[in-house]
Image 1 (cartoon, rainbow, N blue to C red):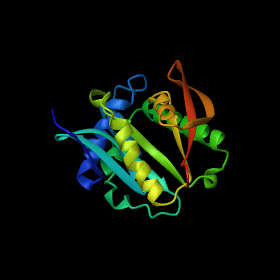
Image 2: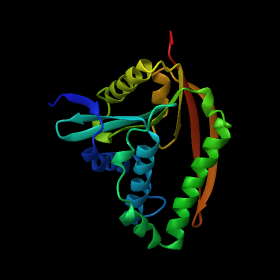
Image 3: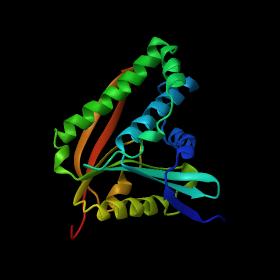
Length: 213
């Protein structure tokens, strides 16, 4: 069995990150259009790269097992040079049906509303953020999430970060953050309609304080 390797993100890792996220997100209830799903993931990954000041990836052999992205307030967003050309993804969304575009817009809008409602404009009360933490389904149960967190934690501590937050929802293993010592400080239920179906999603805001900082 190959050992787990944690290292800093590199540009050639981006397609792997997209694959991990695709395995985590359940979009089957929104659309079966593969190009629309891929486009949404591509836009999300570019957003991660734009907003994060560091990223770590977990590898088992040549396979990507997971990744973590984080941001330290005031630190240079060092991953922006890794952003990808979005022309193909944007064209895919433009060619999508009205219902498919509406599904993407409704989903993004519900996330933005939940985030704004829980955070209340208090981002500056925190020194940093876990922007994304995800583990490939086949790699779960090996302690990879905790190892990625420990790698990010070291980064935060080296920057004298005192308190961070993270936003997550029921599409993720949100309970994992509580095992790491995060405290739930906000909860929000979103309701949106896709086609003729009604969906609900719970979102959560967690905070973590570094001892001795």
